[in-house]
Image (cartoon, rainbow, N blue to C red; front, side, top):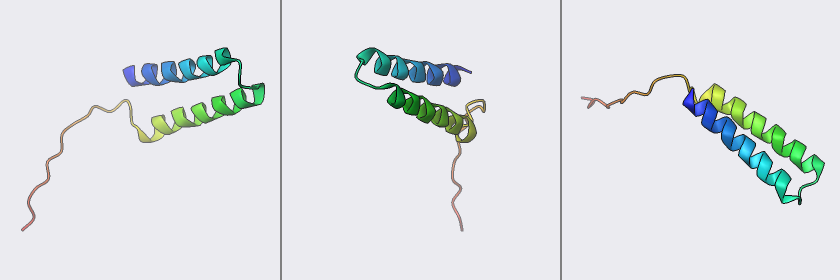
Length: 62
């Protein structure tokens, strides 16, 4: 759950910084929001944020 909170907070901070800079037109902000949503979807799909981590050791092959 903490991974999601951090990811969403970073996405919001990124969009907020772009908006406050005043240099990005609305279309650029919409594209940035779309890219961030795709990135969050990829994190949820590939990152497996809800699974606990575990160490894996390689066994010597004969």
